Length: 72
Image 1: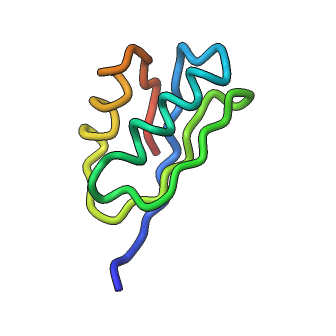
Image 2: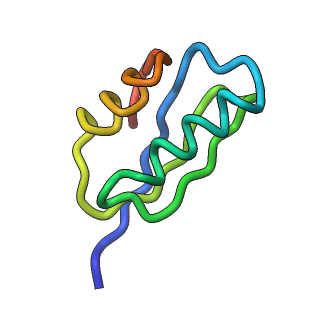
C-alpha cells in the first residue's frame, strides 16, 4: 500500500465551527488526502496524506480565505 504521512497545518482565521467544517471539507476533497482532523482550539489541521505537496494543501486552505502559518 501507499505510505501515509501526517501533516500538521497551523491555520489562522478559523473562528467558528463553520470555519472548521469548511477547512475539513476543502482538504477532504483533495486528491491524495486520506483523513482530516481539524481543531478550532489548536488552530490546526492534522491531515493524513499519500501524495500531495505542501503547496497544494496551503493553496486549498488559502483559496477559501484562511492563512496557513506553517506545515510540518
